[in-house]
Length: 95
Image (cartoon, rainbow, N blue to C red; front, side, top):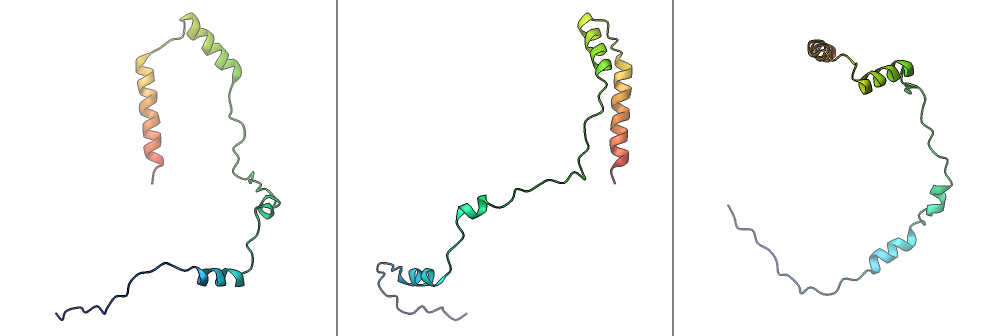
């Protein structure tokens, strides 16, 4: 492989900004921030809005009262069956 030759290097001096200032003067001015604040706000679409959650407030109150009184029936086998069924439903809908 032939050697790579590098020509002589000159001494480094201060950097001048005259080129960037000349280019900057020829460019049109950027819009001010006030132009952005005057633009209309983005309005979200209601097409994907699910609406309010279907909550039965009376049933929630009844369950809360039963939990507070200690009369809410906790049956571990039913809880386990419901958790397994929920997992099966999640796995069956994935494609």
